[in-house]
Image (tube, rainbow, N blue to C red):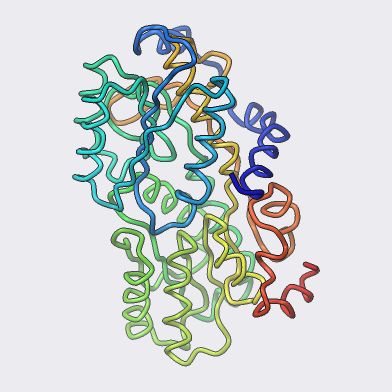
Length: 371
């Protein structure tokens, strides 16, 4: 494991209390019983299947996978292992990967669904095979046993509020574009709902898009259409649901000859996004502590694999469209701007100053106090 991953894993210990405090509410008596619905009690030699949705977004391969692997090892005295598969944004592929893991009798599944509805059949198969399922990052449908993610409506609210505050009186001078995520991702709907709660009535939304597969190239094409429809001089801001799409949006704005870029939001604190924030091209992102989320998912999976209750981990519950009272931990989020890069991604070991401040960004870094 590289130095950054080790730093991130160490940072988890310092921030676990924040997760506990954030997961408000009380678990019902039935919540603890969920841990006994899974496979038979086992020792440390667990085989945990990890299904991640895509590799277009940098976080999954760079952070989530190694952090989950590290925590599982730590919790099982080095005896537990991860069987990994990435669906590369294909729901059918992910179902096949899940079915293969079920056939091979993994002890637990951690699933970050490409399509929350499409995965339900595989979740049901896992349940029938006595294999517990932890829904990771996205609330998968079907009889899941546990769920951890971020407060996704709050993510949208943080983005929307930041954009409104940045625009101030300029909001009256034009329109904004909303670049939402993929409709197959239940989180995208929650981001949009949260953002709209802050934006509506305060800004005029000229165009709104649900961006296929969250891809930057699709966001770029959508933005070109928005510029053509609204007019480049009338766009005062852009709500972008994540950093990858923000990159495509900013490319389209530049290509249209817009030299003074309007504020563009983002999410995920990707390295390229952080560098654009430093350079003044992207206004903000939302930092989500992947070390915290990954640690919770691994804790849930190991506990379920050993037939243990989740009472000490999950202090609240959520309802999915198919399952009630799912034991849940929601990790808090932070608005990331050029003012708090040190206190977020650098402090938690996600990036070093050297990684952010490459030769291209040295001067910009100096302006915002990164040295």
